[in-house]
Image (cartoon, rainbow, N blue to C red; front, top):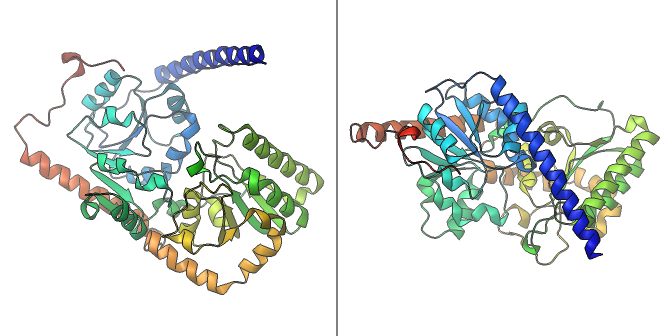
Length: 426
């Protein structure tokens, strides 16, 4: 058994090395064939130090940032080869591959960056945060009541753009000596202004159910994933009714830690394929597309795990159910929406059709939902969150200008030429 594992590991190392070499060649070709980035042009940077597996964190910001770039040009700074290759292929925003610190220095020297956005808490963020003549702003990759949303790492950034009153209350409750009145700026959920897109099915009388589970988590406290405990049973039950259409959108990291979780995911995919083969008119969807939006607005009801998907759906203001974690170690913040949501226990998954009918006719639940939407996101009128995002950025730009004038002539705002100083390579 040990020899078998060693052979497997060796094979994986060789396979990964070959894939890495191929990716480097492709990336070099793409970079060589494109036009150089214009100098002294970009005023906002989005720093992304992750690879393709976490690309979902960037994708949800494409449309809001593209709109923002109409006023303030935006450049994505990508640190990994795999991430850069993916971004160069799909990002609507310009991308700079900055593998080394020297590469990063070169771009900073060539541009006029006032604001740097961060979509996650990658440790390599600190290689960018060493620069003090720009605002470092955490924009996150979602809104939720997970413990990630109250990490003390918020204090590392000059400012954070948060969703609304729920986020402000959460930070004030957990973080010590954090000036959330100044440093946390509520903007709503600008992504919700772009929850649209062509449907991959023909609408009919079927009730459309979005099932969007998260991954299994890397520790018991974050064991929110439901594919094993809820998913197989509930999807199987819905596929049998003939009156439902399932949109299955699992987290991209599903199965990376737990083999059983990955196997359950494959069973669901196979069941959807079999159901469509039996009844092509059902048009059930296994969704792995890069864009998230139409799924949230088109589904009649959503079933999601404790994750940012809860709050993305909440921003859409439409019915949803939350899977209750089976692992008793999973932390659940019951001070917010999760104290008043519609829970789905694992034992109730086979009767999911009846539960969905009951939710559809529950006017009290609908009224409570509206109240929570206001608490988490404020005004959700189309365009309101986008306007708040632009106002926040305008305020930071004005503040940057004030500091630039205040320190004019003292040399503090001079970004040195990396060729004239000793810059580390990594």
